[in-house]
Image (cartoon, rainbow, N blue to C red; front, side):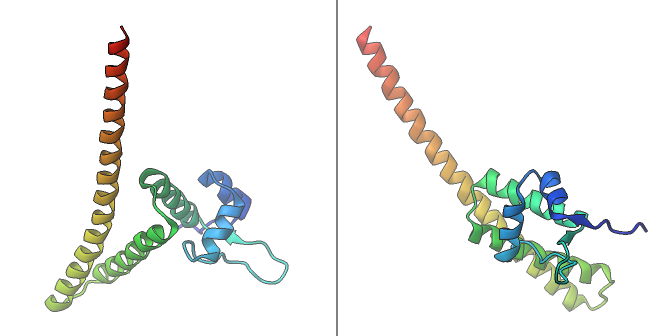
Length: 145
């Protein structure tokens, strides 16, 4: 198993396509776990996992137009599911606990899916509105001809 790299905040920002300010802010509001290496006078250090998390945060924010609170909810659900996956992979023998893990996972996924569906519906409504406006402008242009 290879050792995890320790990266400085600027390296992480470049790799994730964002700014150091965004990383610090996401860390401050709890979207990103606090960096390691925080002895007085030392630099923040991160691992490749931080790059993955920041990249996913930015992707969801851009793709779905999520607010920071919505991002937090998505990632809290994702973190909870990751913990359930870790427990599952340890080889839970108790069938009742296995059922609980799966039921909890289903609930987290369902809430995430509801958020995506709501955003999709909002985008579809905007699309219909713009198509209506475009049709109206086309009609007015045709009337001028």
